[in-house]
Length: 463
Image (cartoon, rainbow, N blue to C red; front, side, top):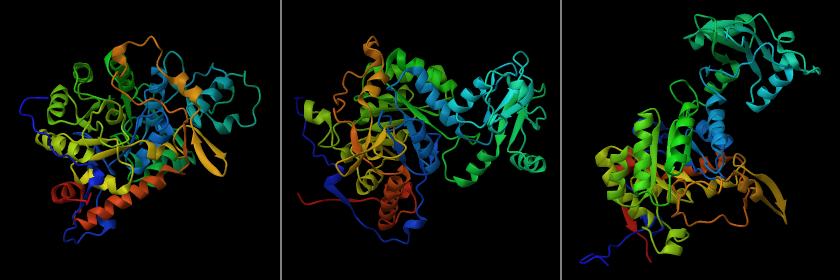
């Protein structure tokens, strides 16, 4: 033991309660808008974890619609992870940038495959050499058509309604109404395809006004990596696909490998992609990550009784004390804190935010929802969400991956039983969490999250 080192008293989220204050705030009026990083905001402080039984593109899309964020897991080949990011970014927006196109010489079968794989209902048809738009083919054109070997040129609509790049949404709506169509191809000065405006995207913009979007109206998405060359390569490829936030997520982030990875990606991508790094539990570790280029810091090592680092290695800091310590350092440097792990209820969620976190990552609580990977199975009167263990094994990085690309301090092993209780749509769980947070904000007289962090006082529960 270090000489003259005192053993400090620490607290977990279950050890304390929030002290109520005088209030004029109603739960319905409390604002849950928060910072995810130094430059990205969320409308709710909730993130779905980058775990293979929690977040792929369906969950990420749902979380962005709700005002939070989904983090695509890394337990898949790099190309697959890039494709999952691309699916989210192409899901909707003010305009589909650089849409998938097809040449007039391609077969109808190729068009069907593209529309199925990318879940789109139509494709602009562009000449292979010039990329000039010469038509559009939609599901309506190929419905009931059986000769899939025929070229696209025989079925496509040649009278294409186009708009110039930079078209405003109101003008696009009027154009759609005038021609009674649902898609407008956006072209540049040379007639090349630059985008696609669809009525579905316009409807979704109105349907999800609280969604987390980038400046183009596209849904925001995160993805996680570990360290080393694999992380750097994945980061570059996903950034090119439109990734908004990269999560460098390891068990213990106060290490040369993590700091080097953060620094390398920051220099490589500049400010193009925001970087969230962790996990840490000390102010010194947080400061090192921020100095290396992190835009937000994740907190959580041995934060609760169930954590592997506490059970197997005897290492950790109870989550409340860890958040308070790290948040004080991060506040001085203008960087948000994100809690990663140990929050499994609305009350713990509210206390984590009050302690200084600006967002919380949820894993197991979302694993049984409709949007999580896996199949719904009924067994002995219960309903479960099951992730096929064989399929999970196929998604793992190859055994030849370098040690630097893995996380040697990650002690948790995959449980043999990969089933979790079925929970229905993730929106129900999110609404339950947000309701608890808003109630806590009303009790403490906090109109928004910064006020809650400023106003919060804790009292210790009886042992």
